[in-house]
Length: 106
Image (tube, rainbow, N blue to C red):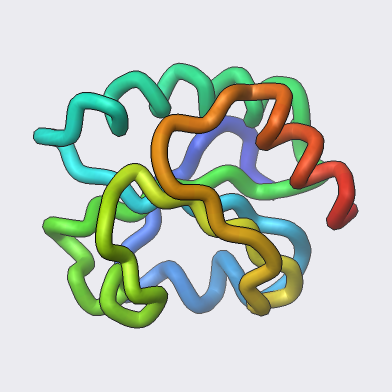
């Protein structure tokens, strides 16, 4: 699996999320809390390593993915296991909470 945070879009999303544990951050470049979430996700990715995928979806570039999950506010993070949504977080999330949620699904 990928190291660090990967960018997904409508073309790559299905393949990247169909198996294993994936945390997806729905964000936009103009969103203040989203900018603060980015460095936290990098730390989560470093801590989790290759046990899970940490990914981002720009809602401005992939509105169809945001619509699929009913994203109304950003940042919204969705934790998936084998393509199925397991948990959803709305707003800025701390590293410990995200690592804990991911670890519970591994």
